[in-house]
Length: 122
Image (cartoon, rainbow, N blue to C red; front, top):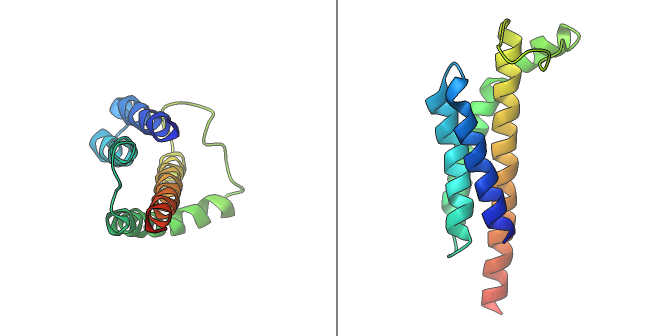
C-alpha cells in the first residue's frame, strides 16, 4: 500500500510541473519515479534498473553542485518567497531539490526491492 501512495505522490508531483519553465523534463523525472513505485506494488523491479536511474539522476544532480555552492555563498537567499523564479538561483535550487527528492525516492525503492528479494531467497 505504501508503494501505491508514494507512486501517486510522485505522479502528483509530475502533474503540477506544467507551469515550470521546463515542464517535460520534470514531468518525466517525477513520472518515472512514480511509475516505478506503482509497478513495484504489483511485481518486483530490477535493482539494476533502479541503480541505472539513480546513476542518471545523480549525474544530473552533481552538475548542479556549482550552483548550490553559489547559492550558499550568496547567504542562501529564499527560494520560496514567490512561485515564479525571478532569479536563477531560485530555479537551480528548486531543480536540485527536485532531483534530491527523486534520488531519495529511488534509493528507498532500491532498499525495499532488496528486502523483497532477500525474503524470497529464504
